[in-house]
Figure (cartoon, rainbow, N blue to C red):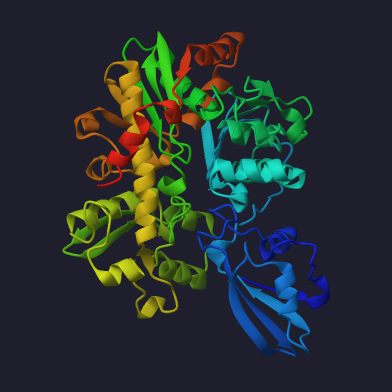
Length: 522
C-alpha cells in the first residue's frame, strides 16, 4: 500500500507514525501492542521533490515518533509517501447496501480477540450463512492485556476499540444481508466473547481487569442494543464466569451441555487466553492460561489467521517441507468472472498467504521429527538459527514475494503457549480429581489441528489423545443455540453456569511454575 501526504498534513501532535496513520484510517497490525518487539509494522518512507526521490528509509511505525520524522525531512521536499506492506494493514470492512425489505433473520456473533465470526439464522433457527474476519482491535495489540492497557490509558483508545468491534460486526451483518437478501438489521443479535472483548464493546471500564484484585465488573447477561442503535431490536451479550473466563466459555459449556452431563467433560479453547473448563452437572472447574496469540499465529513472523491461502499443514520428506493451504475455492466463487483476475488468483494461490496456528504446530512437529530442531526447540544448524527455516521459497512465477519462514523466536513463542496450556490441563484435571471422558477442542483452529501433531509437541498428554474431539466454534454455536431457545429458563441456565463454576487461578497454584518449566521443551 502506497499512501501519499502533503508535508503540511504531518502533525507532531501524534506520538508515533502508527498513531498518525491510524488517524488517517490506516490501521497497522500491532501484535506486540506497540512495544516494538514483533517487527510487523515496518514501513518505508520516501520524500519527494517533483517526483524525484530525495531520501528513503525504513522504521517500525509503532516506535518511530512523528517529531523524529519531521526532523528528518530533507530540504526541498514537497510530499511524503509511506510504503506499507499489505499484510501489515487491517483491511476495512466494505459495507454493502442491504434491502430493508429483505427476509427477517437473527444473528449470532463470536467476538474473539483475533477473529470475529458472525452467523445469520432464519427465524426458525436454520443457519443461512456466516462471515469471518480479523478483529481490527489487533491494532492495539494481539492479546487482551495490551488492549486493557491501551484502553485504561486513553478514553480515545477505549472508544475507538468499541467502535471498531461494533462497526466490524455491523459490516459483517451488511455483507450477509446483501449476500442472502436479508433485512437491513436482524431481529435479535446474540454475542459471545471473552470478558475483555465484552467490556470493550459494552463501553465498560476495563482497567479493573488489569490490576489487582482483578474485578470482573458486570459480566451478567445484558442487552447492549444502545451500542448498535438498533432501537427495539435486542442485542444480547452472553454472561461470563470471571475476569479471564468469559462469555465465550459460558457459551461453549451451554452448547456442549457440560452443565447437564453425568460424566466429566472438558472444553479447551486454544485461543489467545487459553480458556478451559472441566466438569459435569455437579460442578465445573475453569481456568485461563494466558497462552498468548501464538496458537492463532498473531505474533509469528509470517503468521496469519486461518484465511484462504494460509498454510494449515506441513509434511516433510527428509528436510524438505510440503505445504497444504486453506483453499481459495470459496473466495473465488464470490468474485466476478474475468480472465485476468482468475490468472492473478491462480498465481496468488501458489504463494502461501502465511502460516496459521494449525500450520505452525504441524510444521514444528515435522521439524522436530526431521531433526531440524532438537527437543529444546533450538535449530540444529547455525544458518537456520540466524535466518530461520524456509518452509516456502519464491519461484520464478512468484518472484518478488517473500519466503515463508519459521524463526527461532517463533518456536519460542509456541513453546511458551504450549507449556502454559499443558500446565493448565494438568492442574485442572488434578483439581477436578479425574480424567475427562471427552475433551472438546473449540474453534476453527481446533478443527484444523492434527491431534498427532499437538501430542507430538506436548500440548496434550499422549494418554488423552483418544479422548480429544474437534467441536468447532462452540462460542458461536452456543450463541446460535441461545437464539433458538431464548426464554427465561435458558437465561437462568446461563446464569447458573457461573454459579456452578470454580475458578483455578494458575498463578496462585504452587505447582504451576514447576510444571511450566518442565514443559518448556518438546
